[in-house]
Amino acid sequence: MKSDTKKIPKQKRELLNQLKGDNLGILLETIEVINSTNHVKSIVDESMEATRLVMKSEASSLMLLDSDTGELYVSLPTGPAKEDIKGKSIPKNRGIAGWVVENKKPYITNDAQSSEHFWGELADQFTTRNLICVPLIDRSNKVVGVIQALNRRKGEDFTPHDIPVFQALASHIAVAISRAQKIDHIEKRISEKDAMITEIHHRIKNNLQTVSALIEKELPAIEEEKAKEVMRSLYLRIRSMSRLHDLLCRKSLSDKVDMDVYLVELTNRLDEMMNKLHPEIQVKVNAGKVQIPSDKALLCGLILNELLLNIYKHAFVDQQEGAEIVIDLEQLDDEVVIRLADNGIGFSEMPDFNKKSSFGLWIVDVMLKKLKATMDLKSEGGSEFSIRFKVE
Image (tube, rainbow, N blue to C red):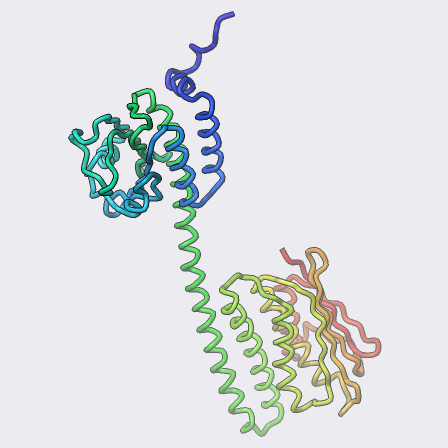
């Protein structure tokens, strides 16, 4: 039977001949690690140690290219002088590394001091005897840096046979670094946008608080009771919106609102306002841990605000003893359920939420449609509103 060796491309055949035993294992393990991480530091750290072991060198270094200045910066070197050269840079187009970047070709010298491209030592206590340097080229054929092994152990020379091995490692490192840099850039942009939107929420919150404070200040001066009631309702709606923006600021814009926290703070604020008129009414909140998107939380807040106002105004006879409002919040799989119940007089007739003469109930109807929620009503020993909606 004839061997299939000739069917293997020459470059791959040379690589397989070079990679035997431990070297192959080290290379494969390194490639697996750098392909599974998105952090530049981890990629460089694994690559440097693999370079030193596979190339049997005393030291190794990886230099990343600054696309703005063209300089090469040493990142996480290994070897006896690693602390002295870490973070140092090589000017544009200078030294062996600069030549490799400019020509996109590997470079070997076994007499570094006499090489015409050798720029000099980056550390006083380290002398470069020989080195091999290859470019890091990403999938778009762009050079992102170089990787080099310095001073082969036992006084041996680097040879052209070492190039395929080093290039195989370098190609995976380049792709991994390029991927990690793109992810870092995206995360930075997201962080900047989050900070900007958080600032917007903060300003909206402050503006809403200013408006509500002005309304609160003017309320005592309003003599006509109907006008005062309208302004009081408007004040509570604005406070509900302001509270949500405040929660979003404090959570650094996760776009998820702890509905249990929002619900408690919302009812406390409304109770403070209405307690002056109905001190006998007690409000209880039974809320499990539920997180929902901020847009849905705002709709829930406006709905509950209107329903609670309606209960405060109509559910109880004057100074009813034991008057109570109970709010339950829970999540069942992908569905959130909010129940709002009182032990008042119940409905004389079921309310018509489409009736535009009742502005508060009309708001509830509009918000329910936006939330894509259903609401069931009961009137047995009081009134009960049960709201259900899906959470993605």
